[in-house]
Amino acid sequence: YFAAVALLRLGVNDPQIRESARYYSWDEVLVLLAGLMEDATPLVKLVMAGDPFLAARCVGGARTVSDIVRMRLIDKMTEKCQSRYSDLRIQAVAGLGNLKSEATIPHLVPMLKDGELDWAAVEALAELKSEAAIPHLVPMLKDEDEHVRETATKVWAEIKSEAAIPHLVPMLKDEGMYVHEAAAKALAELKSEAAIPHLVPMLNDERGEYDTTQLVRTR
Image (cartoon, rainbow, N blue to C red; front, side):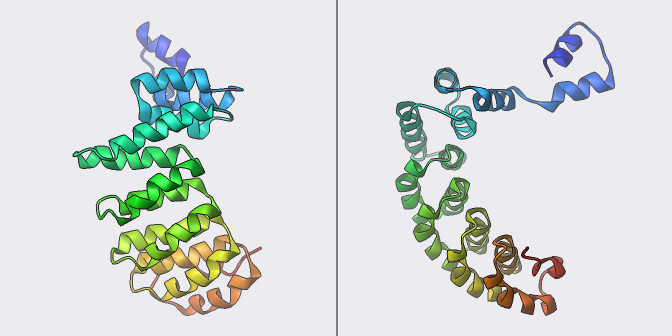
């Protein structure tokens, strides 16, 4: 990437070089760098001064970051969630998810009741891949908004816990096509024999466009 950028600056114009220069953007380079460092705290501090959203991604990809810096970013994201600008609020919720920290749960839970941010909060909780988020996600399976139900259903595939089965089975009968498809795939992702009796009937389900023959292959 860096070699390609340097060559382009020298006037070397070649399709392969242009492609290499587009392969990574600076933000992706910084996220990768954070993951390579023993302690990414100094890097995150520098990035946070200019772009707290990118800093949150760096934290999520890092091996080690100080709790003080992590909490400072949580506070920054939570503050931006109160913005009057819808796009900024949604971006801030995503930022909380990018931190991949259970410490964000108390900040995300109230947003599940915000009609504008509920789906984004569900996606952010999914980023945690933590069973600690389960009690807060269960009620979202009954949300009026089909997109919210679909997103909440997909979360179980990320968490991969057999505790999901009794919650996912009713979603197989959801009227929303993408919801019951997500439920079937989430059950399959558990790779649990306990899910098989619920997946077998889906072999004759004509509502989804997914390959149902793959659903019962739980091993």
